[in-house]
Amino acid sequence: MKRALTFVFVFGFSCCLYAQAVDTTVCEILDHPQSFNGKIVRIKGTVAAGFDQFVVKGADCGINVNKNIWLSYPEGTKAKAGPAIMVHVQPARNFAGEVPAAQRTPVELDKNNKDFKQFDSLLATPYKKGGMCLGCNKFEVTATLVGRLDAVEKADLARDKAGKIIGFGGFGHMNAYSARLVLESVSDVASREIDYSQALAITKDDNAIATGGADPLAPLRKFVAGLPASYLPGQKLKRAIDAFGKEGDRNTGVVIVYGTANTAAAKDEGKGTVDSPDGLLFTCSVNTNRLEGDAEIRAMVFAGENIADLRNPLPEGVGAGIYDLENSAWAITILDTFASKQKTLTLPGGYLVWNLAWPQSEIDKKVDEAISSFLTTGELLHR
Figure 1 (cartoon, rainbow, N blue to C red):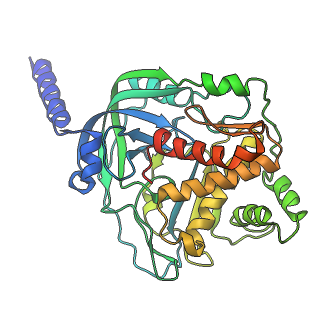
Figure 2 (figure 1 turned 135 degrees about the vertical axis):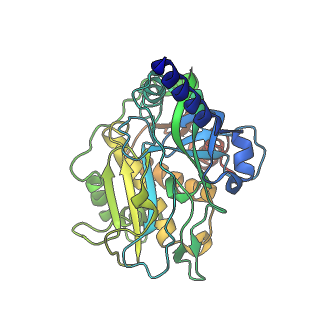
Figure 3 (figure 1 turned 120 degrees about the vertical axis):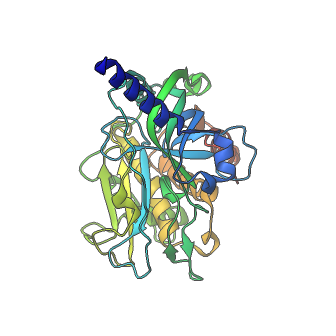
């Protein structure tokens, strides 16, 4: 009898805990993220682990904002899925401004649950056909997700008149997401294999270059050093490379971490433990399991342009939103692709953004259209 009463009590208590979750939708959260801040929510959504995304998508929201919720696992979760590369910005120890401490209720995830294992495994399965497909995954996953919703009023890095970052906000890559879901449980997992057939028809005979090395940027540094100082494309590539510091620089404020950036860590929401020249810290997380060989160079150029645009924006780039920042980074990455004599470049979802066989007179137009289509349709970013 005592055991039965204990079972009833535990079962009833568990039901009460589960009932605390607020049933809502991705679109409702994105429309008013702060009204859900700190709450446990339950949503049905499509999850993608892209090149620089680990998100729950809101494709039909129809609102003029970034239509994604950043997804994170609780701190300490050792799992496989996440973005191929990510840049995170935080105040350094010597940052002059105040940094309010974030108060977050801890979330526990049962990582041994079979639904979570399936969910994480599907999202970590790469697509590896047809030349270089940069950070491409084989599946998108639809599931019911329960977790803590973190939100900010505006996903923005506040700047002074000179363009220097003086305030922090937002989650995920480049701190660009106003809402983050820290996963507590997952169920109803279903997968959809992403269709790469159109790109594969063009790239099937292309072999991705495999170089890599201790310093993935060393070949590119050498290439750029040999270009005329007045050559504009070379200047743009140099700016992206120099964002990581010149060879031998130790105190640049940029740290490269090799691994999967997929957890919500408390240490990332306050001041860092080291100083930097301008009071800013940039952590570039590189998942080499999804960026093999020369793909790592393309990814580092992309991240370098992100860092340069955030840290030292050009006059026309001060206050640029996530769409413009991504557009700029992809343009520089394709410039690097061309300089490396690479035949093709495909992005997650099967978006072909570079093809050496395109007519010379149409290259600029085709590249612009391909990037725009990828950002607005593939990544659901608002112009």
